[in-house]
Length: 178
Image (tube, rainbow, N blue to C red):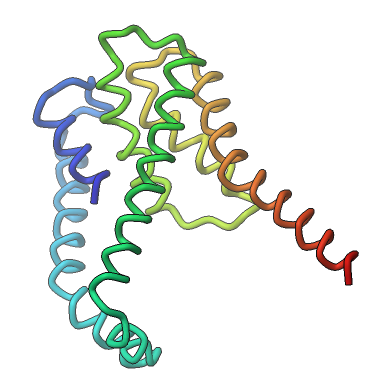
């Protein structure tokens, strides 16, 4: 995923100060996580096949042609790019990020979305988790936490709350016509 590539790039280029020191316990945690990732990758293909068969989704997937799958993938990438640009622009504007750090912010945004994706949440805790994840990812380059949390809140509201309100208004307008 893009977040994994972002994390690798940040570690490889040494552009972010380490969030923790490499002592024995941290190395052990990293080793356990690496083993868990390897096991997940090895078992993911059979697991996905099993889930597809169990959920009877194979009929739907087989019925889709390559053009539909390509268009769906393109729409997904466009949506991800839009969300990433929104987050980066919000951080750059609200946190007054220096010009020489723009690329660093853009590189950390996928890592933020990876972290938000990996942490399970439901609607009532989603905002707190997003704010915390944003602080964890962007704190090494942005000293003040307030613009980080506000940027996270702003993007969440633009992409979650605003469409929901518009949809509710639209559905109620349709019901009034009937």
